Length: 298
Image 1 (tube, rainbow, N blue to C red):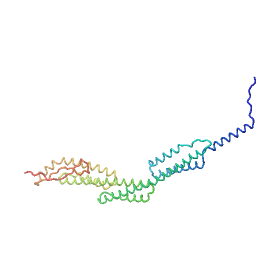
Image 2 (image 1 turned 120 degrees about the horizontal axis):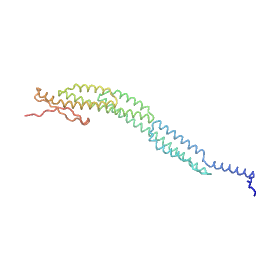
Image 3 (image 1 turned 180 degrees about the vertical axis):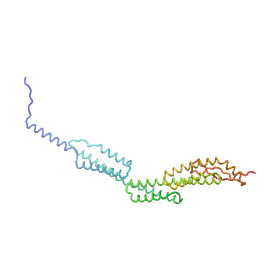
Image 4 (image 1 turned 60 degrees about the horizontal axis):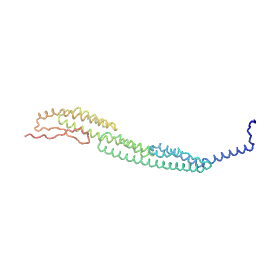
């Protein structure tokens, strides 16, 4: 039995096969990828969009307002050109669409930067106007230490005049709102101080010892005049409330002694002291000392 041996191909056949293979690969690769210029434009637009988004974040555009744009960009980035051998028009169309979508997002980002800057500027202007009105109101009352607020307002005005980006206007708004809150608490605390002082005066007229309360009031007033922030006014207001309630308790305990003293006085028609609710702007448990005429006994 004969053994089989492979028959070698002629040299010219091998060469033809090799050339055919090279030509096939060349044609296949040249047909894929689409127009290089269109693909390059799409890549450039994506780079421009990324740079613009970074710029928007750096100047203070809130991330939440940029979220719809970043989501659309992510969706575009997650796609790829379709596989279409021997037809590069499909790839060209894909990159043209990509380029157009990125360009659209670039325009949306630019518009968002402009509108956000305008909104922050308007908010800062409104806050500064309210700040000015609150400061003027306290100046009319001639209460507390208003110099720090005046200095803050002047400084905010300078910042406002040089502000350019959303983050600049945001700083002005934050500082103005902080001052507005503090000025509001200043007025509320001053009302508490006034109520406390009036109570002390009325209790003194009833011959109740107010030495301790007068000392507390003097200390409270000094603290009030040295305070220019919300935390200080809030703390002082809480302390005055506690002092006020303690004064009421002590006064009620002193009523029998006051009654006896009045009965023994030479006045034929002594004044009687009672507790009535004060304005609703204070806490419900607070009471104010008022004087009324007693019933006539015939």
